[in-house]
Image 1 (cartoon, helix red, strand yellow):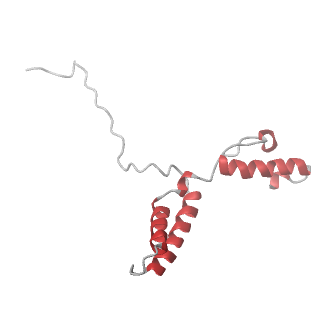
Image 2 (cartoon, rainbow, N blue to C red; image 1 turned 90 degrees about the horizontal axis):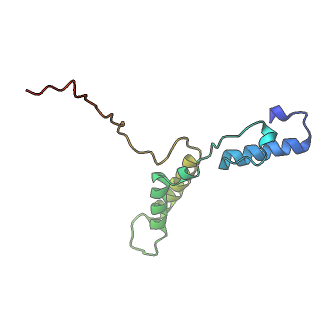
Length: 119
């Protein structure tokens, strides 16, 4: 917003809308207002991660109407905390949240026929 100092209010409003919508969705409704595309920095897909799933499960466990289940109150509180933390952490994470491949890609080895000897 510092770059828009001294500009008309309509131009500043367009820049603000571009920044806000561009950071969330990656779409820039007024591309000429900011001088270029604003990159998406909020990851909607990142909200659905293992921590938010565990938190949702614990929260549902705490909400079950069965009286004999142990630690229902603590599970509900922990579930809310994990769900909130997982959603907020995933929302502002960078990178692909679904890239869980820890193996490096293998390279194919090619051998020419001149390198192979038949004995």
